[in-house]
Image 1 (cartoon, helix red, strand yellow):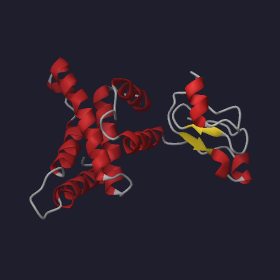
Image 2: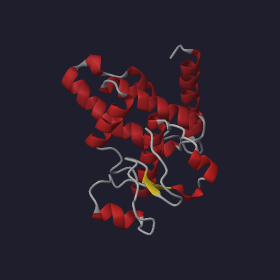
Image 3: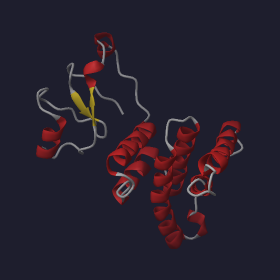
Image 4: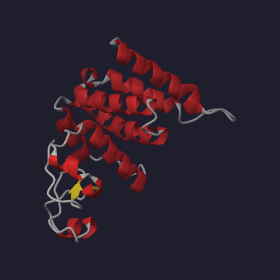
Length: 191
């Protein structure tokens, strides 16, 4: 995903990279009055230095960007409308693979983000809960070949942290060690 900077203060959509033409216009008024933009959160590029504006921008990781967008949506609206079928199709397009491999890719992003303390437990848990519904639908339609085993491991790790005994932190007791094992296996090439 590449884009160019037009001027200091330009607002750029974090999803479709559509930039607002009028720097006086707010993202909210532009997004509600135009159909070009996808209406996701915007980046304000006013903090970029003049030196960096002259350089070519570093390509962003579209998978990490997408996870950040989901996290922003989660923080604004909660888990209820976190992931739609359209969102999943867009994720599959970003990953550039099959649905099964896309499920594994989102699980990998969540496991690594949680392990590195970039993503909070409740966000990761909400995403895997949203995704597992699609996984079950695929399983019902296509059988056992559609079941993403890696995604399932990550799903079970976050599921284990939802409820614990009185006085214990199930995230620290169950989820963190399970995710650490998953990440170790990813890094060592055995997972």
